[in-house]
Length: 82
Image (cartoon, rainbow, N blue to C red; front, side, top):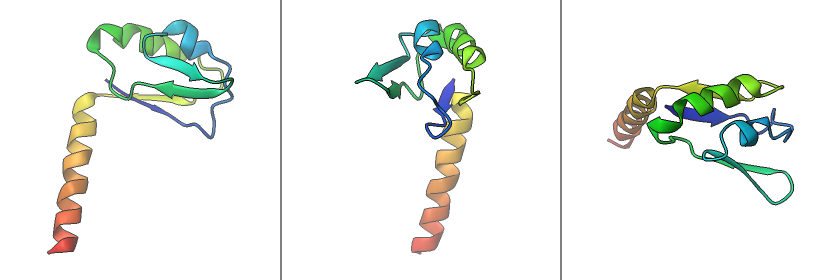
């Protein structure tokens, strides 16, 4: 699973940290850190965290989508360089 947090939308309520502390954590008072591609064993907790976010700042996707996008981006850069 791929996790994206819109840090402009995030208000640091911390519901994600409570729901999935293995994936989301605060650094300092309000700076959210998270694993972009957490282990599959945390998928259910990450889904709960996304649902618990009061400002809906968490977007979930499949890891294969991230890989496909990265390959497409790399191909686009390669074409521009040639």
